[in-house]
Image (cartoon, rainbow, N blue to C red; front, side):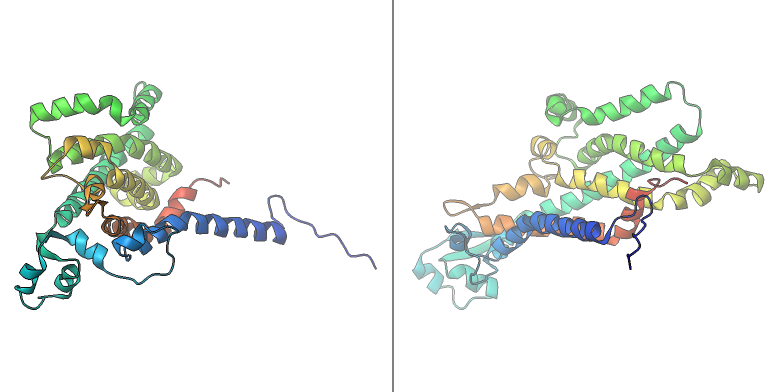
Length: 317
């Protein structure tokens, strides 16, 4: 008896193909996670273990890197440390083992707070303005629409170093240097082009008949936009917000050039953490680990909307 051949629909993968695809995805995920796992592991190493060769995979974990990240310390003599009495905390005890004392908090919390304010503030403004502009380009007859859209996108193609000096001079003249407002406006201007292009595609996919029906029922254009269009753009807004936040959160060149004190963000601050004889790699790794958490939480929080936003309009009937 001859087995009947298995008939597959067009575009349907065989079980072997699906297994191979899944294996490749898992392998890729593992490879990309290795640097992240190594950074987290380094944050729990001692300074000696962090630079040992060959690298140590098994080690005695310590919180010294986090203590060094959140505090400033000074080296003192053994006689001075003995005269201080008992350690006041576990962090103080940990530091005294290296003949050092804690002199105060570090600037990391302030820099991390600046990143939160500037990153989320610029993301909100970019997505807000991008939503309005995308709706206007999609629903209204705009003269030279294609040219304007290309011009908006072209601002994203320019490397930051090409406009760094003019922006530095302009900000110094306007008094926006080393201010959170100046960084929010700059990141908004950079991200709004990406927001307009991404969100316009989502607005185009929403049938115009929905709004026309709402207008017939007595809705104004603003009401139809708020109650009909905006709810259907949730996935697109979530995906755009994540992309804009990632840029503003990780941006280094403008933050290094335009901030130095009050408005400095975490990216230019973390590499400047100095230890004995050079960089304090456990403290750097600890700062990097904490710096990654908001992006991870924000992405996980919007993961369902992100998946729908990325695949929105991919399949057409």
